Length: 310
Length: 300
Image (cartoon, rainbow over all chains, first blue to last red; front, side, top):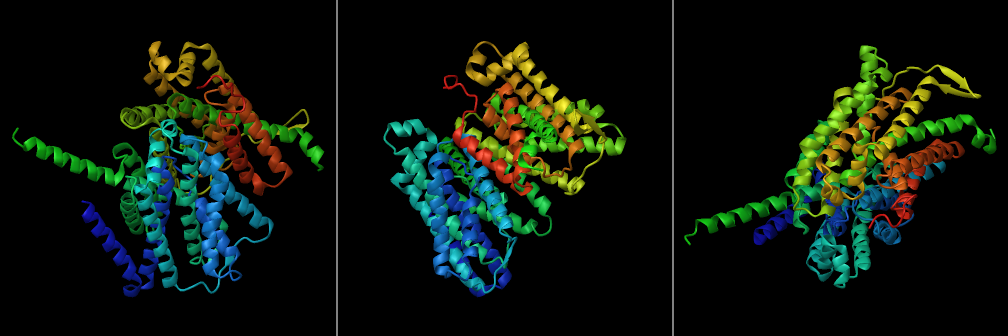
C-alpha cells in the first residue's frame, strides 16, 4: 500500500513537473491552481489536522502575502518580496498565536474566522481611506515561472507535513489533539509546540498568496481574503482524511476535479455540492477518503482471517 | 450635528434599541442550541434569512401582514429545527466513538455545509438579488423621536419574546430542565431529565426564534440569500459576551452590541461597521472567553 502510494505520488509530481512543457496556457493555469490548493491544504494540516485546532482563517496568511507583494510591486525584487510574504505571515502567526491558541474547540474555529475577517475589513477600510480601490499590475513574470514557484511551494508543503507527521514534534502535536492536559502532564511543551505548528503552517500560505498575486493583473484586496478559500481548504483536508500528506493530496485532487467540472457552468450547483460533500463526509466518513481505504483494508483482512480454518 | 448632540439624540438610542432587541432574539436561539448540545450552529443566521423570505412571500404573494404570519412562520421554523435534530443531529451524537472536541469541530463543519447548501439553494430558487417590501412604514412621533411603525413593532415583539423566554427558563419546569441540561448535562441525566427531548425542544425553540427574527428583519431592511451570516456573527458575539446559556445576560450583551454598533457607525463611518463588529468579536473572545458576567466558580 505505501509503496503504491509512493509510486502514485511520484507519478503525480512528474506529471505536474512536465505539464508546462507539454500543454497550452489554459492547462498550465489549471495545474497552477491545483498546486496552489495542494500547498494551502498541506500547510493547513500542519496545525489543524495534527493538533485538532481547526482553523477557519487560513486565508488571512494568503491574503497578507498577496497584499505585501502587491504593495511592494516594482519596488522590491520578487526574489525578496515573495519570501518576505512568507515571513510576514509567519510573524503575524507568532504575534497572535499565544492569545489565539489559548482558546479551544469551536471557539477557536470562529475566532480564527473572525480574526481573518477583521484583517480583511481593516485593510479594505484602510485602502478606501487612502483612496486605492484596486490596482493594476504590469509586467508580471511569465506563467511558467509562476508555475514552478508554486510547484516548489506545493512540494515544500507536502515535505513539511510528511516530516512533521513522522517527527517527535508531530507525535507531541498528536498527543495534544487527543488530550491536552495529559500531554502536558507527560512533559510535552504544549504551548511551544502549538505556537511552532501555527507559525510553520502560516509561512507557506503567505508565499502562496504572494505568488498568486502575480497572476492577478487586476488586484482587489477583498478577493484575496475571501473566506471561501479557508472553507475550501478545510473541505479538501476533511475529504482526504488522515493526518499525513496522503489525505490532502487525495482530497485536493477530488474536490479540484469536481470544481473544474462544475464551477464554470454552474457555480451555484458547485457550491451546493461542496456543502453536500461537507455534510455527507462529516456524517458518513469523518475520517475521509483515507479512512474509507483503511476500513476497507481492515475488513478484507478480517474477512481473510474468518475464512481460515481454526 | 456635533458629537455631543449625536450621542444624546433619542433617534440614535431608538435605533440602537431596535438593533439590540433583534440581536437578542437571534442570539437566544443560538444560545439554547449551543448550551444544550455544545454545538455551534453557524447556519443559525440562515434560518433568520429563511424567515425573512417566508415573510416576504406571504406578504407579496398572499397579501398577509408579516405580523399576522409571524406565528405560523415561527411554527414552521420550530418544525424545521425538530426535523433537523431528529434526522441529522442525533446521528452525529450517536457516533459516540469520536472524542467530544472532535465532535464539536465536526458539528461545526456540518453546519457550515448546511449553511452553504441553504444559501445557494435559496439563491438558485429565488435569484441572489436583494429583496424588500414596505409595510407599516408611516412615521410616528413619540417623545420628539421619529419612529416608523415597523420598528416599533419589531422592538416590541423581539423584546417581549426575549423576556418571555427568560421567564420560561427561570419559572417553568420545562425551562428549568433545559437550564439543568445547559449547566450540568450528566447530572441532568441522573435526576431523570429526558435530555434527548430537551435537546429536541431547544432546537425547535432556537429555530422558531430565529425565524421570528427573520420576519421582523424583513420589515426593516433589504435581504438576500447571503444576508444571514452577519447575524450569526452578531449572535456569537452576544453569547460570548453574555455567557453560555445565560439568557438574561445575553439580553444585556445584545443591547450593548446594538449600542456599540449604532453609535460606533454614527461617530465614524459606515465603512467601519464590519471592522467594528469583528473587532468586538475578536476582542471579546480573547479577553472574555467565558463571558462578561461570568461567575468564575460556576464552571469547572
